[in-house]
Image (cartoon, rainbow, N blue to C red; front, side, top):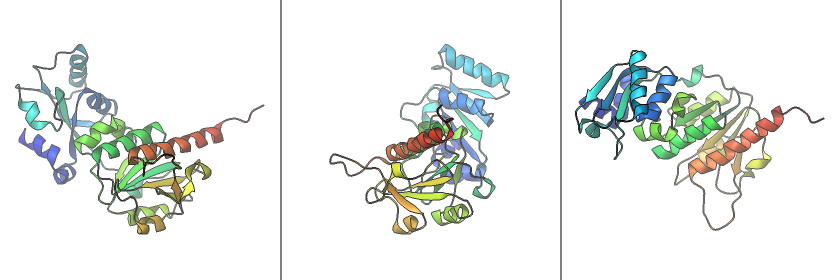
Length: 261
């Protein structure tokens, strides 16, 4: 249990061992659906009383995943959540390398996004909007942070999530792609609805408080903004990303639609 707790707390350990901890039946089911490699599933049997959870544990057993029953109170000392669910699991992950990824369509880049809830929500939204991948770079949060995993709602298993050292590496990679890169800025960018997001494109979003640096913006082809009314200074980064991504989806859908007769 001490190792599981350290995996929950330490990014360096997760990456050195290629193992992360997922919490709750929903993430467990998503991991099973994605045929992840499990080290084990750990359950507080005193609270695992629902029929759905027992059926999920039976599915684990059928898949050859080891299930360990924990004494009351042990899971609470391991889990990251304040009110932990009665089951967690340790799974292996294999990072996708940027050099091995072939871009088709749209990719989202998170640069210096530090909030795990925002990062996980962007991963979930990118999955829902049909993006090809999410790239996380700079001083961004670890995508395998327990809070990020929970916020992704299982989408971390459905869409490639690539971690890079800095945005310069991403920009160099994208320079070989016949596409357009867009830096999202709060003001003075082109209206996001007036740029072509239907083809190969890279959307870059920045830090919650400071946005994108001038250097990062200079690496992109164009800056885009979301026109706003009212007195709000800006949108939450995950909300703003969702607005742009679903505009891109709408453009792709219109482009793919057969001509009207």
